[in-house]
Image (cartoon, rainbow, N blue to C red; front, side, top):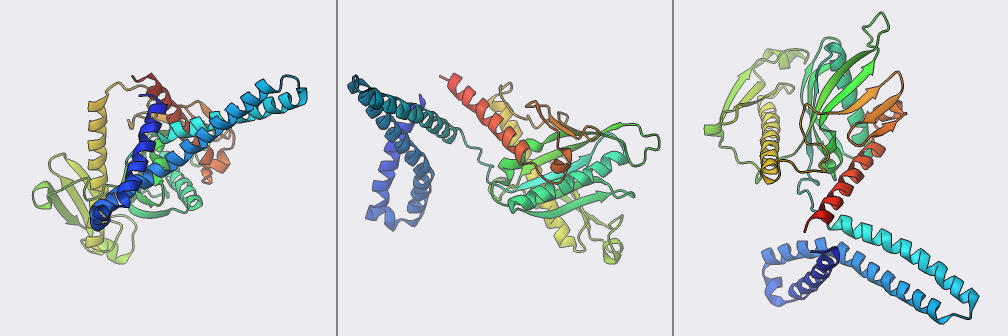
Length: 362
């Protein structure tokens, strides 16, 4: 089905919904009224943009008609031609906007996200960089007005982190962060390096959509083994002297989640369950995606944790995202949370590939 055919069908459906919502039968059924209202609200921006495109098409026709009529009036013909050129540019922009609106929506885009950062190759240097990545994402979250809640940490003696898990809450969190999953490589001279040699280390990042109750159903009695134990590492008096740490094992899959940062066993259990559900939901999404198309082309970021997606080169002040061949020479600003250009470029590339895929489909 062509874009134009889809737009015509959506405009027709929009009109049908408007008529239905005005009937006493639908207004009396709160559940149906709510469902149809959501559908109507979702179509409204598309229909408004389509009407604007139709208006531009009419104005182009008028300008072309004026050009044909003003054969003898050179000045009028030139003005009409100039107007037509400007309208053609507006038409192209309107078409692109509508095409993006019609792309398949990721149902998880508006969800909160579980962000997991783990030190990879590189020992203590990788752990230190994991902490710097956390601060980078914290500042980016602040710039977007998001909230970040610490769920679990595993600190090292020198102030780095073997693992950090946080919940990021706000508008459009997952849609903005989902392309961060993968291996992030860092090249720099470590603070522990006396000889001034550049080392290469890495951290892995996983971004998982927060699972809602309807997304993942767990039978706690049959599916989970819950162990409690005394917390280890830095944490204060009661954290390390009571059995407040919680380890949850999901028996069907073998997934294990540990939370020990809170003094309360109940709080640690709640946080561990939140992480476990997100990981289970992520597994389900990946299995469904693989079943749908194992070799789908044009995909940005497969989610493979072994995939090297980005390099942070400190001596050159350079950041390179290898998936889209983006190189920026302002690494300092990026590490301060200025990720807007990177996030926008990844999103635009993903949309362009989806558009190409859609255009190639029958």
